[in-house]
Image 1 (cartoon, rainbow, N blue to C red):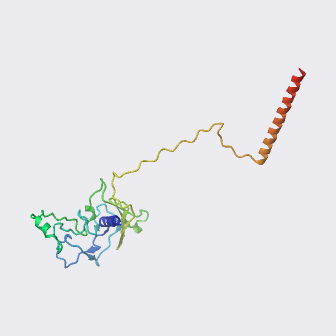
Image 2: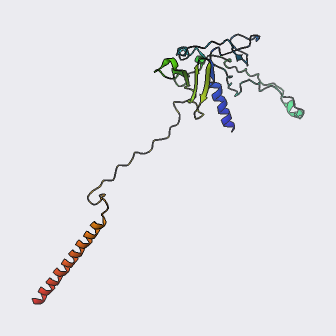
Image 3: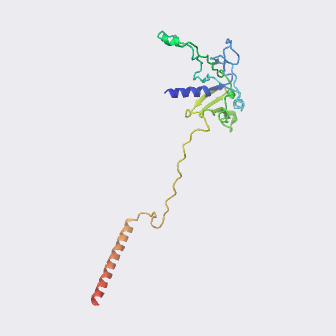
Amino acid sequence: MNYLRAQIARVSAATHISIIDFYKFEEDDDDDSDGEGRDSFIPNVEFEPLPVYELVDPSLNSWVHHIKHILPQGRCQWVNPTTKIDNEEFDEEEEEEENEDPDEPQQEEGPPLLNMINQDRDVDGLPAWSAARSSDLIPAYSIAVLKSNTWPGACAYGFDKKFENVYIGFGHKYSSENYSPPPPPPVFEEYTTDLEVTEVPDPTVADEQALLAMQQEQLEREAEEAEMEDDEEDDD
């Protein structure tokens, strides 16, 4: 259960994207304009939809991330592990033993909110995202479709003022060195048939009766021949 929850968080943080300017930071926010330090945004009521050909442009300048990046610490919000927690039951003897404070760790920082997806790291020589139209037959009615090469199965589509994110995958990142099970052994060749082993249709009742009659006649004939040979020997 915990593993599944962790994988969902990783996929969501890396693949939930939206059309640029669909969201914006609040105007009264005094942080930097590039989004650093901001942890919330609001829908942009003045959003103007982009044409599909811009949404599928190879530069990928029309899509941004709208979920916080997961830091190497495993959190979206960095927590200083050396910060002491007030605890009345804390053992005073252990506190006296810690004479020297540990070195202050360097704070981990990730990409800010609403950063462009073209800044995502490549994966095994492939770009992080691939963009294409849903159909080239009728471009006027096609929509933009983006596929994540980092998390196979993660897709996003957008057109007009709508976008959505979908993931149907195995919960694993792409890797060119993934384990692949060995192929099954080759199929055996067909059994070599000869005159002794040949498939024939089942005989009918009439054929079986004819065969029995023929065998009966042959037995009678052999019996007559045996009697004639005995008679000749007696004459001699």
